[in-house]
Image 1 (cartoon, helix red, strand yellow):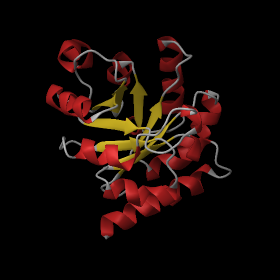
Image 2 (cartoon, rainbow, N blue to C red):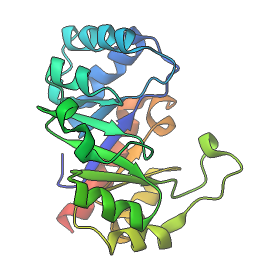
Image 3 (cartoon, helix red, strand yellow):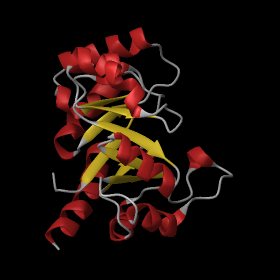
Image 4 (tube, rainbow, N blue to C red):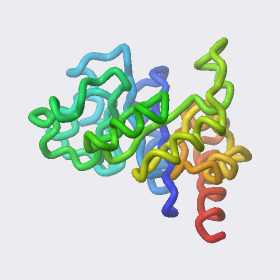
Length: 206
């Protein structure tokens, strides 16, 4: 894996068995696999994480969206928080032991604020038109450049990411990309991941 980051976010449509089967193939080629299961409870996600770990997915490869207690209990790689999350300073008690915390942001001002609060990275989007954000105009590369001008921590770009778009995103200041449907809905998820990783590695060498 190159210095650029590749995050893969679960789509909430797969069983734990299906998710584990794909995760087992792709984890060596990605920075993180985010467990983002909005319809599942804390207990359901904790049991799912235990299943993933038992099938051989390394703890450091798993990030959890929204549940710091799972991250710390299972020794996972990171925590992803929503943009509506209170200031990180108010969550220190809950986030003790979390190795890496990222926050979703929607503007340069939010990015700067989250960096000052101690976030390790921010996730910004959606950059391009996306089926998951149908009818909502994308923020585009110009907005990404504006965020990059305000922070020094990594920016992970999300939204409509395809391999052929990755270079332009990195050139606009992102430190990596996050992908959902481009991996889970691919005919061959492993080959899809390798296509993204190849671009990231080429940009790193270049």
